[in-house]
Image 1 (cartoon, rainbow, N blue to C red):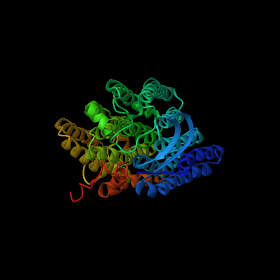
Image 2: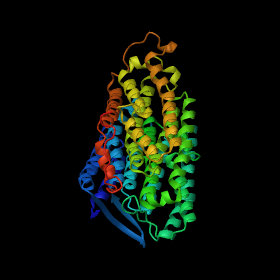
Image 3: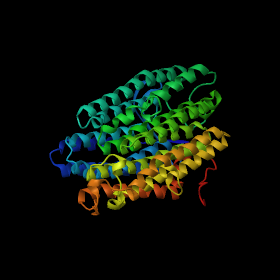
Image 4: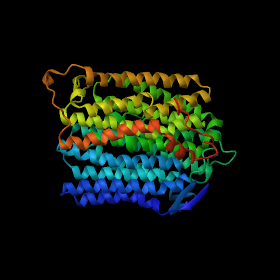
Amino acid sequence: MIETTSGMLILTAIIPMVTALLVMVSGKRPNIRESWSVVGAVLTFASVVNLAPAVLSGETLRCTYAQILPGVSVTLKLDGLGLLFAGTSSFLWILAAFYCVGYMRGLDEHAQTRFYVCYAAAVGAAMGAAFAGNLFTLYLFYEIVSVVTYPLVMHHQDGEGYEGGKKYIIYLFFTSKAFLLSGMVLVYFMAGTLEFGNGVMAGIFPAGTSGPLLVVSFLLFLFGFAKSGIMPFHNWLPSAMVAPTPVSALLHAVVVVKVGVFSIARVMLSVYGVNTLSGLGLGTFTAYFVSITIVCASVIALTKTNLKARLAYSTISQLSYIILGVALLNPLGVTGGLVHITNHAFSKITLFFCAGAIFVVSGKKDIREMGGLGRRMPWTMGAFALASLSMIGVPPVSGFVSKWYLALGTMEAHNWVLLTVLLASSLLNAGYFVPVVFQAFFGTPPPEDEGKTESLEKTPLVRFMVVPLVITATCSALFGLYPDLFFKIISVLDTGFFAGLTNVTAGL
């Protein structure tokens, strides 16, 4: 593996932060303010794309900016895993930037400048986490994400907003301070460094490292990265639903929760490694443990009639697919888990975009009141249906690719219990998504909507929301048909481990 020094890494993380500053100084001129968001998003994605060829050719880009202690530094590093996360987040920011214009103006939301500033800063922090070259840098940007997204959660500044924001910050700060810092200290004590290793097999610990200490430190990371939504440290996530829908999309699809699962995947593969986790039985333990979250969150989702609440518990369940896949510790399972970072992001942001569009034009949040809405919002509900198929895992939409590789990974591990969990959870996914689609297209409209047939998608502001959600839904379908790029990105993380990895869904 070739390491190359590149100053472009810091530029990619800085662009969103500069965007936030430009948005702030343009606050009294809405058109300019929102234009900066779009420009910043495009430039960030372009910067990631500019870095991609080097990574895809087998290089690892790296640059150290500050040395704090031996083995502890502020270092940025880009490999296949970081490229997958950074590319997904930066591209979706472009679509979210347009969507936010329609949503925020459509509801005449207050504090829009603060909203756009924090939105851009959150993406910048996500870029920093994606490019983190060691645990210290990852922890630094992980905490920045928490700080800059807090104002977004309590955006409405009412009782619910402050309560949701308080729970959000308490959960995330408690777990990061109590668990993550302790885990980092243990790792430094055992390995003498916080730098990530190269490849996914060996990890960073020397031979003879204490097994019990390795187990304890791993558990501290598993619970410390609470943004991943693993039960029992998941309750911040549904509580954060008091935020505006674009924030929910940011929290549940793009930045916050993805930083959580990305961080766990990074620690598993680049700190402990497949050999260490397998030798200690931590892979199997983790897979079984997150299976509880997959099933329980899906069952809870069935009971929710508020659309955003149902989507929130769906997110909690779906995130654990990513961790389960990595915990299988074989190429097929890890591929299924990592590719789900992107597949879930596009499908889930579509679902939240749809929920927001529905609320802006109709004021409806309760699924039982959405009868007939599909006939008045065909593009929105059509996109919702397509993204739902992806969440369920129906071919050829992208979620099918994730679940197919996850299923193959469980069979390679000869673990029929985990395979049963995947199949059962897919049935539960269908149980809470299909009724929404059925109600929208075939349900009886509520009394106040009887006889109304005019389209709700014609106004310019609504189109600002509909066009992005149609694009994200279309991408969900295309990624299911053409997933090879993501396999290529994942394979360069460790060409030996992923040797021979091919598109096993081709021809199905």
